[in-house]
Length: 173
Image (cartoon, rainbow, N blue to C red; front, side, top):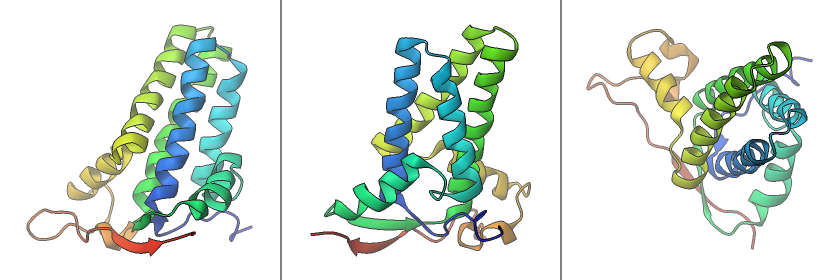
């Protein structure tokens, strides 16, 4: 069970961005169709990814086993803990959306939470900017998250996050 509940460290940034693109597609579909049942799919995906990385996530499996290996691009490895934190924020927001929709009949709040997820996932997928990672690094900077959680993210004396992501080269042909 311990091995099942792991998160990759480091994370292939290409895979993270592709998962975020899948989340954008799902959240936009939810917002357009106003389909409450898709909120469960969204929440499951985030919960699965925060607990096990791509292992129990259908979207994570599709991306890491099928899509990323077929791309002939340079892949960068980035620290895993900030990405897990970002998935955790997505899990909280999506579970909040399910709760608002089904528990309190607050569809407006539910879809506002989905819109927030859409915004963050769009930043990640289109621009490579992880809002959750930025929050994580800010919390490290002020000492809320200890350096031991992510040695690769540790704050340098100048107050900068170090080191830069590393490139792992091309995968696929």
